[in-house]
Length: 532
Image (cartoon, rainbow, N blue to C red; front, side, top):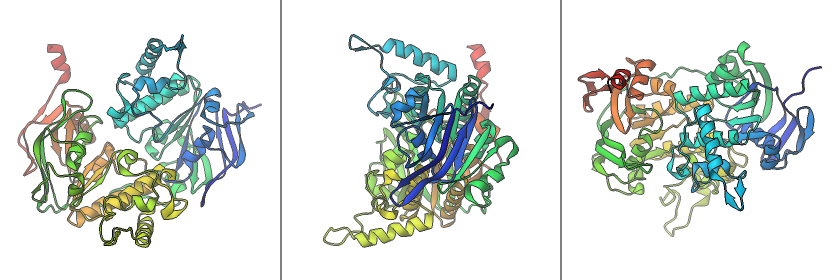
C-alpha cells in the first residue's frame, strides 16, 4: 500500500467577489519532496496556499494530512499541524526586532519574563546551520527586503514545522542568496521535510523541484515530473502560449543627458557609515542604464536620494538641466516616474481601490480634478479601465477592487501601468519584474525598451542577472556604496559581472561622460588576506 500524502488538498474551491480564485483544484504533496506550484499572476497560487495555512476558508473541498482529514481554521491550527509558511508579502511587525518577530506567538516565559537568551541561541544556531545570516537586534523597518526574507524563513524554521510553504521566496533575493536558498531547501528535503514552493522562475523549478503543479486563471492544468519536462513546456502550460525568453531590441541611440548625478552621498539608517559614497554617473535620453549589485550595497539608498525619499549628505542631482537636489518628491515626479522596490510600502495605498491607486501623484491635475477641487470620478474610472486593459491588470471587481485584495503580480502590473503612462523624461524602475510570471516579464521588458525608443531615459535597478545582461545598454555595478565598474552587456560575461558585484574587480577610473574605462584592476582578496 502506498504511503499517504503528507498533504492532500482535494477539490478546493475558493471564491471572492467577482472571481473564483481556486476552481476545483486538487494538489498532492508527497513526504520528503519539493513540489513547485507554478502559474501566471492571479492564477490562484497564493490563495490556495493561504487556504492550506488557514488564512482563508474554502467553500468546497477537503484537506488531508497524512491521509486524515483535518480542519484548518486559522494559522495557529496550521502551526499545530506542523505547517509553516513564508509569505510573499512579509508578515512582520515593522517596529519589532528580527528576534522579536521570529519568536512572536511562541514566546518562552518564566515568571512572566521573556526568555530571550534561549531564543537568541536557537536563532543563532539555525542561521548558522542554514546560512541565513541576520542581525537579531535590528528593527524590521531598518533592514533590506532580503534580510526580511531571511527573517521570515527563520521564523518558520524556529517553529520546527515539517510542511514548509515558500510563497515566492526568491523574489527579493540576490543570485547568490537564491543559490544558498536552493541548497537550504535540498537540505530540508534530505531531513524529511515536505516543501511547497510557489515561484514564477522556471530555472529554479528545474534546479530544485521534484514535481510541479500548474494553475491557470484559477483552474488546475496538470502535474508533471520536473526532470521529464522542459522549461518551454512548463511555460506553455502556465500562460497557454509560447513565450520568447530572448529580449529583442535595436542598438541604443543616446541623446542629451537627462539625469546627471555628481558626487552623491546618502546616509545609512543601519550604521554610521554612508550607504552611498561619492557616486557620479549620467543617464541619456534613449538609453537604459542598469545599476547592478548584490542587495544591500547602496542601491536602495541611491534610489531614495534620487527620488527625494531621503536627503543627500552631499552631491548634486540634475534632471533635464534643473538642479533637483533639494526639491520635493512632487516636484521631482513631474519629470520622473518611479517603480519602487517595495510595492506595499511605497507603491500603493493598499486600502484604496485600484482606480485611486492609478492616479496617485496625479489626482490634483485637471484631468482628474475639477476647478472646484472635486474628483472627476467618471474620468478616473475610465482612465483606470484603460490602463487595466492595456497592461493586463487582473482584479476581481475591476477599478473598484481594493488593492490589498489583488495578487502581488497584478499589484506590480498596476504600478508599472501608472508610472509608465505618466508623463516623464526619466523612468526609475527598481526590480520592475519582481514577482511577475514569464509572460508578464516579457511584456515589462518590451515596455522598458519601448520607453527607451521613445527617447526617454531609463534607470533600471535589478538583482536578476538575466535581466541585467539582456535589457540595458550600459551596466553600472555598485559595491559597498560605490560605483566600481561600468560594463557593456554585449562585451561582458556573467562571470566578470559577478567579480565586480563581489568587489573582487573594479574599473579604477570611470569616465561617466564617455563611458570609457581607462584602467582596470583585479583585487586578489585571497592574497590580501594571506598577507594580512
